Image (cartoon, rainbow, N blue to C red; front, side, top):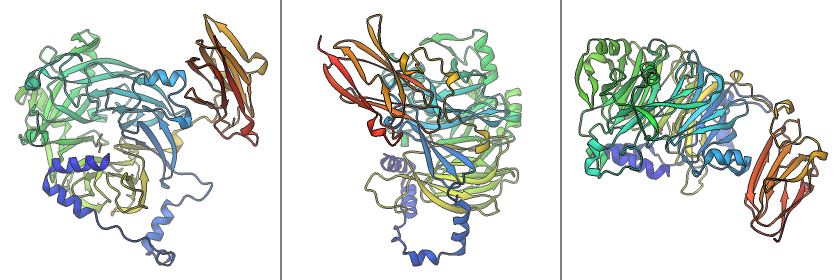
Length: 621
Ligand code: RUQ
Ligand code: CUA
């Protein structure tokens, strides 16, 4: 639905923007002939060489892109921009059997879709460490993907009181914490009803801190901070000098209802919430706050010194902290400038209580006291990424371009048009304390005319840009599944994924490694079938149960060879599991239909793959 969303957003930005959008969407050119291509400029030849990864060679970086409301994360290689893999997170994905086996089904619960927005790689000392990837989705959840096997291993939430978790899942520099924040305020706890006329007073937002276990990555909701009913939008963790602080943008600080594109744009400035997360951690561990909806909620009126509000350009979107932690970059998305806030000045203002008032007990800082510079980047600044040399790159939705500018001198040094209407952008290792430079990916909302016509539902376009030189250079276009909001780029040598699950590590209670141990047994009135999968047979080949019985089928793929996956597709029962080498998965269901039901291996595994089949026989009671 990106087209209708883009139109809604354009409406929100006003006619000026709509015009700019139309201007940006030029007429698609006719496909070029081979001769025309052969005559391509030397610039194109250079670009082609830069992105070309010869057969058998590998890419330099992984790109982890959020898949928006597809509920997935997509993995691409850079510089080829080839799609390598899909990681299902919040949506069942038959290709890998995700959402069908007992474990992933339990993780998904009743929700079978989620709107994935912002991937966040785990960090050690502010540098990506290649252990986990956290992603948020709007319905109050965060998932952890283990980069050892590229599988979703944990989903927490929906968290109480968090409604519309957009400003998430940014991790702190040593992966101590990840956060959620409310975008659509509601009366809390959930289930409370208040009329919309009472929005400004009875509806509440929260910022939630979720603790991460440094060894296992396991997430535990720790506390929430009660916030006014603003729409919290994006965030970033402080680093180096600003380590210990989190920054969240908020729009609709008018606390308005109705037609927000008008009612939430009345004030000249909205806010960035500045959170002292170490102080919040301490206060929570001292037992401060009250239990609301089953979680500790701290009200800044009663627990002060946790959060401050910093005025910024109206209707802000992104907020980004520079690699040295000194500058906090945020802007209104209707503006032609972005503001660099000075962390030191923020600290001084807090110390001196240089406040201009408060919002529900949260002190408001003075814009002039904390801003360092307004940088004239261009129209519609959304997000900023960084290079290794003090350069910053800001995406401009309205201008449909990227501006390159310098931290400290605040000079805009280059601009490049993108096709079209960029949202986020992602630089190589761009959120770390030491960005690589080299590549920048523009994550564009519209792709019209840049690819073969596939009807009204068009993909997004992601453009690879070379940032090794003074001038940015467009290298290639590629097309992505809906909808990459944010993406992160990590060097390949930081990841060491396994290729099979080692047999010694499989401690599953129902695993069987020898066909003589396979078979059906009954436990506590349930049928348990332990099945061995190996090229090209299921053992046992017939699973006999009685109508009405609850059946657990435990499938162990005893292969220890790379790429030897086996599937288990059971007709009429809507069951589809894929088991990786060395893995055991279970699927539990009620055998409520009598009859004979074939199952078969869904993953091509050998010359006799087609022979890998069997029957579930459900006898009449
Ligand atoms: S947001 S661009 Cu989550 Cu920036 Cu979509
Ligand atoms: Cu096993 Cu195909």
